[in-house]
Image 1 (cartoon, helix red, strand yellow):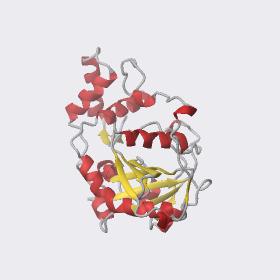
Image 2: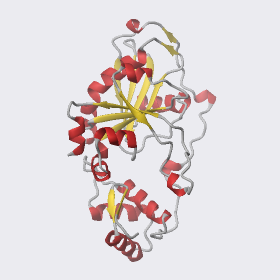
Image 3: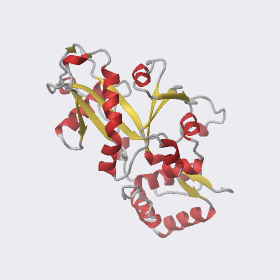
Image 4: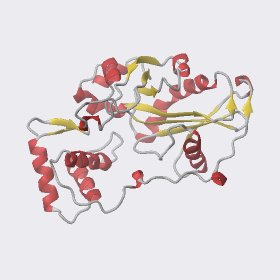
Length: 295
């Protein structure tokens, strides 16, 4: 590495590499997990909530090893988030009653934040695993899940927000971000990673009606859980499957498309497209969202 680079949101140059190599050599008996925790502590690498970013440090170390810049100790166990979840057993499926009616018959909707370990959260994750076309491997990092019920308490939909995409040219142009600003402010953007209307629910205009109250409350919910705000929401819509009508009707802004490259695309010399191209929609939560993200 001849010039410093931004990797995992950190400026990594010769001095940082020397420090990391010396850290590994001084502690040869340490596991990758302990190394990443200690490195995050050494650098005081924390989220806005104050939580130590040891997973970000571990990802940084893995990226440096992939480039041949460091040598990590052998992996001692498979990371929990990478274990393949078994297919849900048919008899373990969550029963979903049919709801074919008008929106007026369901209102006012009840929007519930799901909390880890509670029965509603278990049900929420099962719904996503069973019925969302992308499946669900469990939450990683900062995230908020909403379970939407009818006024009578019948489950209707699941909405999950998590960490923003590391790079998205269309989004970054709209914000006006430099790579350094993105690295510093990315935690202030949340990604609508999953939106599921349960398959037995057929209610015109329900999706749009769900988005509106969530966009009004998510900044406060995020602040309450993680101790920092979010100023912008993003989502990626696969046009071969969906038209993005509910986002358009809820005043989300279409800003372009993804390039189709993934974080791993740089490994391929031909730079071919390795993922579906998706439409990019944004929703600013405040009038000054762009200036706030560029400070």
